[in-house]
Length: 120
Image 1 (cartoon, rainbow, N blue to C red):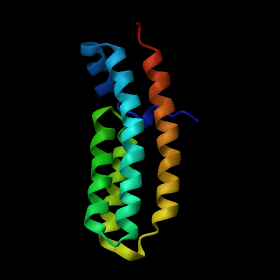
Image 2 (image 1 turned 60 degrees about the vertical axis):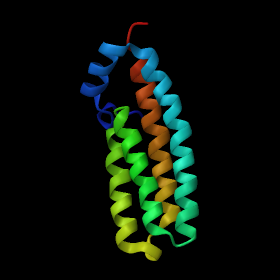
Image 3 (image 1 turned 120 degrees about the vertical axis):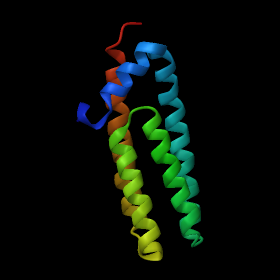
Image 4 (image 1 turned 60 degrees about the horizontal axis):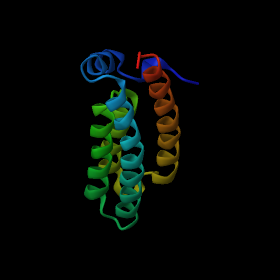
């Protein structure tokens, strides 16, 4: 279920045009590691009632997603950040994170496939 509209093709095309696909592919691997760490930290902060810190972790995810052209994930992470800071202890953390993780899997796959379309 790869939807090419969930990634920022213009940004990716321009960046890959400068750097080649290899660094971008490496950045995608780093993103996978980072997003897992940020989500784990966010979960820990949320459970401790440290909502501003949890929000900062979501903000980091937004930035990391933006930096590699995962525009849908960046928008969703920002929405989650604002909602968490507004609702605080009433924020439905577990279902939101589960749904977000599904988007991460989908959009990483889309980006991975798109990067394969570039010449080596």
